[in-house]
Image (cartoon, rainbow, N blue to C red; front, side, top):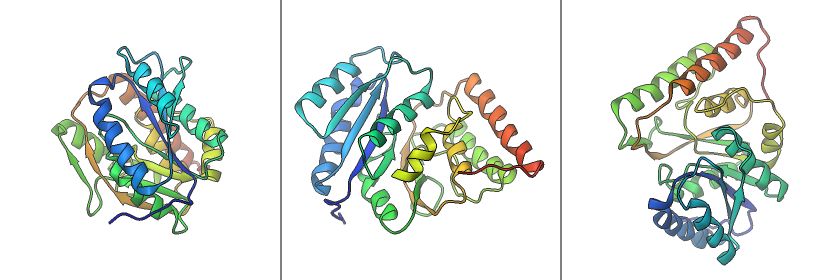
Length: 247
């Protein structure tokens, strides 16, 4: 059942790389969500990782439809830079609620109203969860599912967090939280970014939102895994020495 949030000033940021194949299907669903809610703006972040015509598609859409903004960010060094660049763009534009999600239909835009509802009910953060009641992880290899569940188990065990899903990238925040995130010296360079955010925000008011996730690719680079281990170890040692940090 759709809820209307026509008075809520919200935006979603979406890093885009080599998304031409599913671009139009993704935009069709996003446009449906924007129309039903009668509010919202989408910020696409594109950088040099994208080798197809994703930038041109985003730019042309933004010129034709003011609900979409195309952000060209060739300075990005990794996907974390892309997320932060998008968060900063939405923050600087003055939006009160900012959601981040992945493209390629890995994250279903039709879940956006649930995030808005959670953030409208007194929560500062809304974290997407594949492993809570109502969530799911489809079209994913056994390796990818095992990696996600193992990452959640290890993070909760070593960092003292208590979330059903510590590695999902579908999440939303109030403006004050985004302001803290974009000024914090994050250590992650790849996938562990999502876990690092959840750890740093563990003392905020939050709720987990059940999501349906598609991950057709099973590829996770060795560099990304090593960075995850390094950052996890850093925060675990801080916890052991009674110097845990939080925002």
